[in-house]
Image 1 (cartoon, helix red, strand yellow):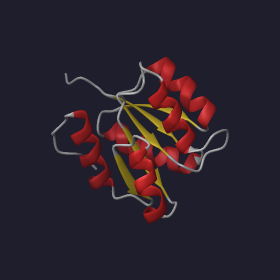
Image 2: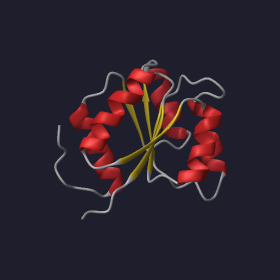
Image 3: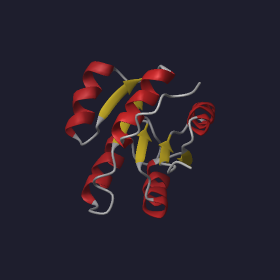
Image 4: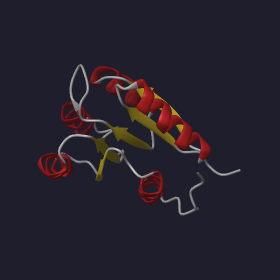
Length: 130
């Protein structure tokens, strides 16, 4: 049995959260969810995920606030973060990467590309399913 990685999905849209859940569970990831910035920090402290998928447009602290807070906490600072956002790519990608994100993915994402990126960041080379 392979080691299952924990992924925290920080997304306020329930339909998008469901899409992530189906995709990631089919590829043997454990998923945790937060719908806003405050819940994201609470869940990150509680579940200590292996990776975070982070939307920028969140209530109670946008994604940039969450990135800043994660990077300020020594026990969470090294968790890789992929920002997945519908916000303008050119004005937000550089800002997200400078704030500590490992990657920026534009919504709507390509499942294969997102899974490949997650696998790369988690050191998990197996071929994605679905």
